Length: 133
Image (tube, helix red, strand yellow):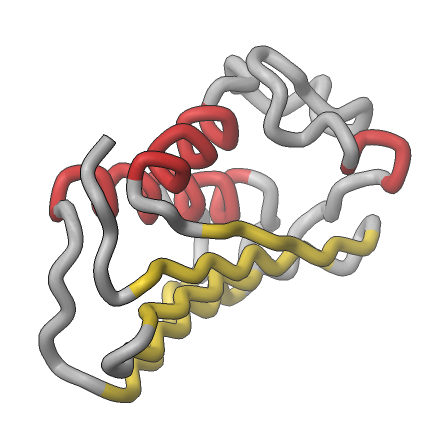
């Protein structure tokens, strides 16, 4: 799904093993990385950084994309919500809502910073142990 000369760069540090629901974690990463690629142009990099220790797993997905307008940021995780600067990019507005639901099931947290035309960084933190819902 990458565009011409787009790269995904993985940086991992910390514990080599971390116990988490594999399918939910996979779906979270697919959604975030796919969005990062979709909303970034050719010749850009998507950085995926992971750090695991005995207390938590931190994942950061950083792109060089179109960014999220400030007016849209408070609605970002709502179902079917699409930002005003994405009208020419395909999507349903469900991806980040799905990410949020999976995070809730894993007792994870998400935060982001974004600047229009400069990119977005999502940071996720999962506790070392989670209770299944």
